[in-house]
Length: 375
Image (cartoon, rainbow, N blue to C red; front, side):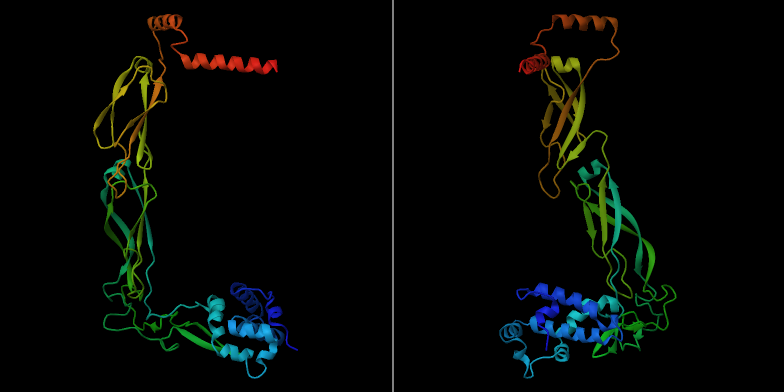
């Protein structure tokens, strides 16, 4: 008596296609004959798993099975070997075991292989990020061999078709009731071999050289930006397409400015008298111009002044960010006797109106704790 197909795969009758496929992959890997050589029980189980999946993955067959059970296929409908021969199992078999058997769905392309992508780290200054620049870089990389034109074969000769796989890049081996395709061990899946390799590149079709490249860095570029130079990576094997070169940019910290997107921030120390009496100072912006900042009377520590349009340009946009100047009021140091006397005299003449924040703070703190103690 046949086991229920759902029980064979270990799924419920409401299982969707994804659950069916997942259960089948797991069981097929476990009971595959190559993993259990000589075990007839495993081979039988493997056939049952395949038969169950071939039925349930097909909506029409599954509907018939759900209604009539195994009786729906008793008159020449389906068996394990027929299910495999129909080709439904072949694709998923290659998907499951392709890597284990040497390469999966990789196809031969006459030995041509794409070159690897390369990474280049570049550090620029904030000023360079502001204006943009054209930089020259030197990259050691594989380039196509000029002696053999990238074929890998000695000049005057050509690669020949692999005698083991006939140019397919794969060889087929029979195992029980099915066949297994593997990457050809003689040509490594290329489909061609080189009898007389090029003396300069030793049959690789490429050599290592240092190249000089020009990189355009646009104004407004940000830290961590990646620039792709298509086709500037390593040359492909035996005339294959080149990989890409990726430039990873980092912006060096600036001595005076901190960046936040398109805006810049700068902390400027001012004297206590300038903050109290008012005044002005000049700052140099990234474009090299001088801008005067007016400080009103009574300016407090940490106050910000916005200079519109004096920040960073926005990448590939007409907008420009702003520059924010933050004041840091500096307390006088190394006072002379006379300076100290004047400050002491000023302190005696001061009232709560001169320092409303400090006097108000201590007054509120005193009231808070007095009311807290009374509770």
